[in-house]
Image (cartoon, rainbow, N blue to C red; front, side, top):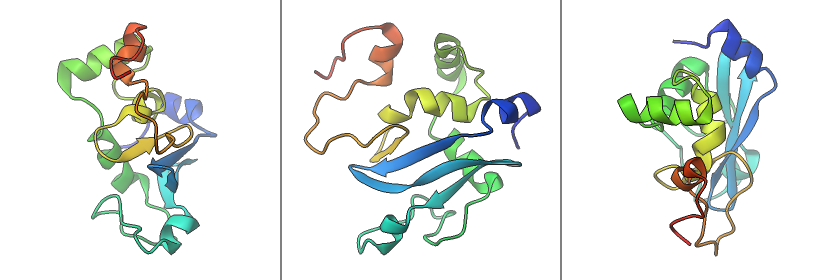
Length: 140
């Protein structure tokens, strides 16, 4: 499973940070075969740093697309919800990176994908659902 030629063209210069609270965990980057992931040196040096997946152990080497893409796909909704999210964002449901660039700031779990880290004290993160609907966030 890889990216189509059109998706590769769209994501040639992609560099998407991955955060745990305010701590950078690593970066999703474009390579010719698709997206790869590399842990941030500060995360590797952190005594409490942990692998974000058992298939992606801590280390300086990049995680290849064949390992990263299935993990990223599991972060997205499935079926009709994925289709609806893609339609609302103007992205194909198969465009994992494009979708995560839009909704990665509001993922289930402790990680945030894209943008800057949420401030540790932030209680009113604007969630993807409210952004899609054009509402003020229901959390605030």
